[in-house]
Image 1 (cartoon, rainbow, N blue to C red):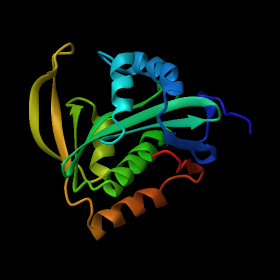
Image 2 (spheres, rainbow, N blue to C red):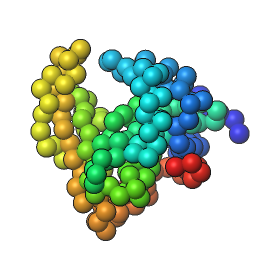
Image 3 (spheres, one colour):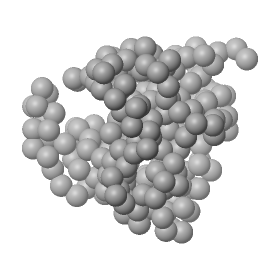
Amino acid sequence: MSVPEANGADPAALEVRIMPMRRRHLRSVLRIENQVAHRGWSLGLFMSELAARDCRIYLVAKVGPEVVGYAGALLAGDDAHVTTISVDPRWQGRRIATRMLLVLARKAIERGAQALTLEVRASNEPAIQLYRRFGFVPAGIRANYYSDLGEDALVMWASDVRSADYAQRLAAIEAGLPTGTEIEEVGW
């Protein structure tokens, strides 16, 4: 399979593979993290998150051999806290974050989550719109959460994610995606 160039890739023509994040992906993950994060996670933090597989879900998105995005969640009781979701800037706008959040939400539900939560920069309107499509609603503000940017975080929650209505929401999101998403089922 040839790998399309990021800048000219047609979202409908992309073959995106979603798989569990492994140590071998961390070099690529850190490359993306350093491009998109205000104060990025360290290698040590990612390693400790990957070591806690019983209460964490971390995944990567690949186009061909290239890691183009990653996402993660922490499971705590009935809640799943989305800890990170990032897409390489060269690959943004191709619904990769949507594909990853869809898999992350379903894996969290499979593992018992009743609700999903996250924080997002209050000015990050594209991310806020993505989360709204997934049923997240604003629940509060964490003042100066992103202290290095001097920016507040919007706290968002999606409740009743085990309901038939939420399953229908996820199915509708999936139906609206371009074809070409492969999910590696081994190792979750």
